[in-house]
Length: 353
Ligand code: RAM
Image (cartoon, rainbow, N blue to C red):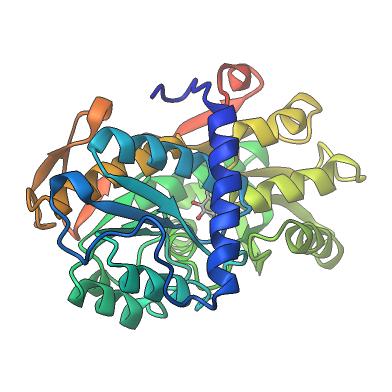
């Protein structure tokens, strides 16, 4: 697998299509037992272990890239099969039936990006009792419910980068708003908390005022409407931070054909392939992200190390994550992937995801 300049887009698209049909099959049977490709209970031996990824939602282009990396990682790590199941929306409890189905199938490793830190808890506890290892990635569960969390980048760094970018782009003063994903998402809320703390504590940001936080639910249409609503409600708005790939793309689309293009700044976390036209047409100057494929890739290797009993999730445990090398589990049971990259007109064409 090649990272950052990855060219396996076609394979990823095929994988995403498979992912969507898997979700529909499981939805159709109400999250009940599905037997295809399952293992024998939570204790598969080396050669027949199974891994299932449960993203926040399917039909999210960010998810497709993450899962492309996950699929590569699962194969390289030596899982007998890897699958993707998940809801089509990112609401708090939408993942529960999918977790239950994996427990019934005896899946050895469940990798989940939690839509809510607690709503998935009881279902994950049952999965663990049945022998599954739980790897959270992208958006953590309450730590009680998982063996470890694979985090894209240090959460505070993600927050700080976005503040630096918006401050630069609005000349250090004025009203700003945050357009987030869902109100329950652990990752979003952690980044927002760090942004609010830094705005309050750092004198460099004394003239920046956070006037609103709105939620587009990682739904393209809702995010677009929320962006529009922000500009109507706050005529003096100077900038928008959208720490979600769905939100930033929808907001850019809105701004690009509005009177605010080039006047209201927009930054946050975006996919270079989705943001390229808006960087080229002057709607967006600079935004950030990590390589999402690496997140799925590292999560698969972490799952294998747990399932093999090589690690337990203790601080200081180490495992090999294929071509990304050795990873160590840090305080809080967290494995960092990182680092973040900033994208602008000068470098955006160097990236293909
Ligand atoms: C969205 C999701 C995801 C987040 C990225 C940056 O696709 O909200 O959880 O990590 O954006």
